[in-house]
Amino acid sequence: MVQVLEGRRVFEHLTTDENLIAGAHVQRDPRVVQAGLERVYEYFPRLKERRAVKSGYLSGGEQQMLAIGRALMSAPRVMLLDEPSLGLAPMLVEEIFTIVHRLHQEEKLTVLLVEQNATLALEFAEHGYVMENGRIVLDGAASALIENADIKEFYLGLTDVGARKSYRDVKHYKRRKRWLS
Image 1 (spheres, rainbow, N blue to C red):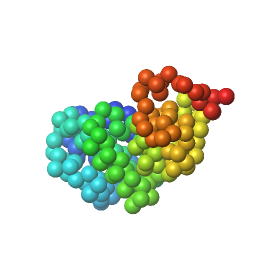
Image 2 (cartoon, rainbow, N blue to C red; image 1 turned 90 degrees about the vertical axis):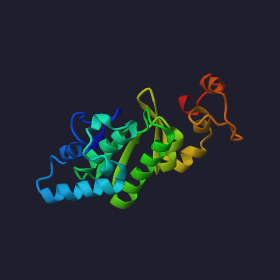
Image 3 (cartoon, rainbow, N blue to C red; image 1 turned 135 degrees about the horizontal axis):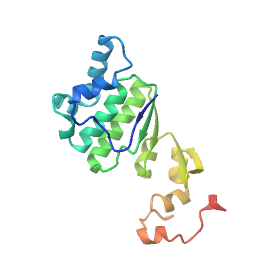
């Protein structure tokens, strides 16, 4: 099990390669480390181009890719991924989520994702949990949560007819959340 913390937290003074090798500290065989590097660079080709660059000079998206790649170097079966979209451009967020989805499909990696972007998270998830004030108030299949009227209104900003609502209307709840009865 490995955790990718919110805010990327790369070793800024180390190169991309050195950051990835640091993630392989549990590996004993140099061939396993080399295979891990190749695997990470296959999923994140942008990092391969920047392998000799100190990670402090990478863009935010590249640093997020590096943080995920560093976690992959330990060959985990479960990855805890905290807010991967934080502070990134929408195109990069979509790219990172697609890669994480590929990792789940191709590597059979289980990913526990914490994400504020409910629409995107539910699009890629199989199962979801809704937390409020540190308490799980609702859970179920992601496809069911997307269709839930309360989730649509309170988290996706949609009305029953699918039109977007004003932020002000969503935050001033016109009706009470059913799970808070």
